[in-house]
Image 1 (cartoon, one colour):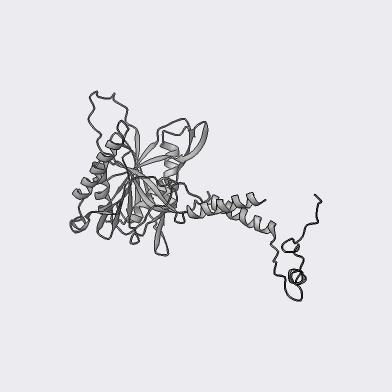
Image 2 (tube, chains in turn red, green):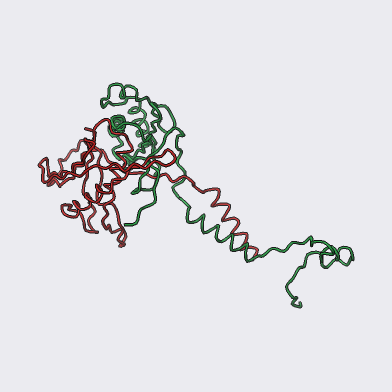
Length: 168
Length: 180
């Protein structure tokens, strides 16, 4: 019994010392920049469909599917900023946008199978005045759509899109 | 060795009357307090389970007190990468000054931040020297206040990408996932 209590005490001490009380996390967004020059020119690959999410006006989002510069479809989504402020920390939710993006991915997205290692690409465009918290809200909404992804024979749910932040 | 009935043992073997009187309580409360082992072990087990559930292997990330991070739901665990923080108009890379955003805020135009570019490029060179033959991950974490405008975010983002860090992560406060 005494060694057992000792073990519990030591475990509690270790866990208390190494405990992390702040829950920091991250949201990914790639940048499209040219890579280093290659000696051998890679084979030409058929350009894939990409979802462009534009937040340039305060009243709507525009979802545009493009393939190598050609517009395939355009959808307007009314913009409702559900701003929540708690202890000075803001969070923006766009449930309608998230639902529409998920529906668009289900109808147009190409990488849906769990064995498919590639992801559909979403590109976020915004004007220069938008506060950062709104950008995070939109990226969060894009990551709401999930798909299966096989890792070591086990299917996990991962975001359907890979997000790129456009600086233009 | 005979088996004794469970009970209080401490100081009961001392053959002195006054000790026996004190130990057994006498007219006062006993000096030997009983401790319920079952309750104590229950408490310890519950504490261990709680601490194990809230344990995070990614460790604590230093956050500048002046930075109010936005909150997001669909997040990933933190990783070990250079942290570019924007507090007020100052830019910090891992806590060291790396320029400011005043010129961008005044002009409201996308600009490359040379000081930030040079520091990140230097960090990239050091990483390559320390890890020869390995692919550079090119990950940088941006710790940006919720009120910073997009033009500043874009400038820092583009500068990081040009310095060899195209995989940018935005640091946020994690929100619990809502059930669908």
